[in-house]
Length: 59
Image (tube, helix red, strand yellow):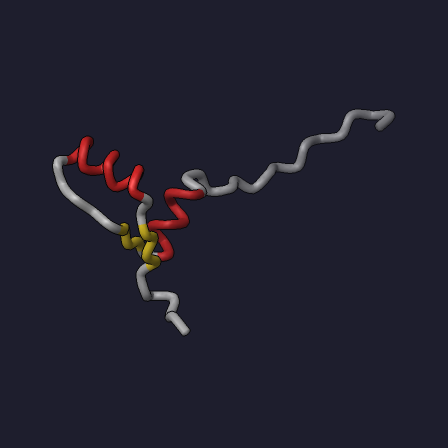
């Protein structure tokens, strides 16, 4: 069982490996991210609490 502090490892497809090689000139077979980094990339905006909207008369 992994711990929350363990990195998340994502193995790349051959197409993704080629894209990284073309973009950076470096070879990669996987990426490793902390849970926090993964969350930031998949959900870049934090949900803002909604302010109560004043109700109009009659609703």
